Length: 186
Image 1: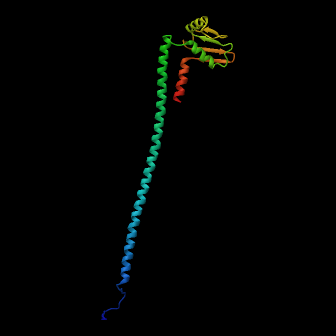
Image 2: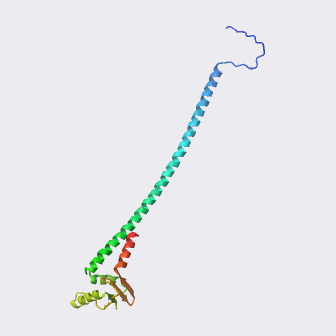
Image 3: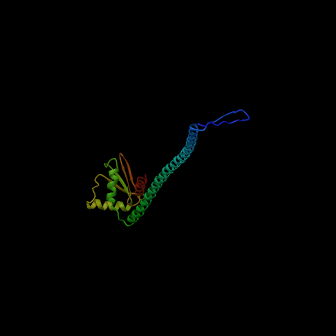
């Protein structure tokens, strides 16, 4: 092997020998740089993940709010539909009543079913309905034994007021329609 001699005008402070250790240092530097790049990319991914989770939360909150609005709209629409239906029924009934197209005997039976007792009942009716009931009783078509009927000009046609010793039942069509409207809207 050949030897090389070098003469220097000053003493050597540091010396470095190139070889296998250099390759390891280069590899370590490359590995460190790759790790730094990977760490930076992982931080970007975490930031993006956090942003996506915030967006998902915002979308979920919006979905909950939209569902609440939808339920409110349906409820309000149902209430409006119920009120409209009741008003239509009210107008139809008013027209039918005005034309005398109703069964006062059926109305009386319905009010008696709601009464706490049928015994000794007194039923107040409009004068026209009273006359109709009197005709039904005379013809034998009404089964109103033990019930007293009185004409009352303050009661509208197709309505009646039932009083018994155990309580009172008011059968007024407007009240019935209002109750139906409340049930439908509720």
